[in-house]
Length: 236
Image (tube, rainbow, N blue to C red; front, side):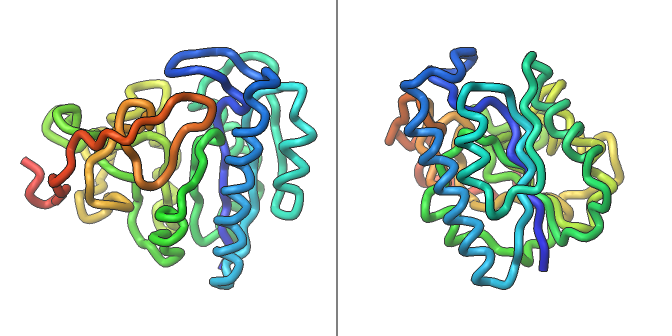
């Protein structure tokens, strides 16, 4: 089995939501620790006989070579842009540069500034067969129209759904992708799901998340939707 991990977004950020402070010395240790948590994840996939290529689609900092060094044994390609182009272009530019995506059994799109917790590594299943988001956002922010409002830090797509990668759109509401998959494609609820069935905000500064935390910003242990379980077939 073979997988592709596309790491997108700003690395070596420092500060909370919307902050553009990138590449400062104070951001170095936590970003490298995040990268090392990704390597631990990839090593666990290797034990399951799943090899992984890593594609970095990020922005230029003085630490580019350090980042490449951490991923060296898995690195397929790295693109570091000088100017902000947005998550959507980072993702789709990377996809456009993959010569044969069909060689991969699945693609995992993931923010590069996430530290992966053991829970993520433990629950990750290389045989998942649906398009998956990490979870649904915490209540009362769990709906996009009548559909689930998805966590936007990761998207897992198995090979049979590669035609729908073109529908990934971070330029619009990135939390509304479940909604758009349902309303703008032929996908049904049976094709979509979450990695875990509890509700958590994307931002680990606002709400506890058992799968990851965003490095170089504050994180909270407050679990706003504790006791609530997500059931997609009885969502409304």
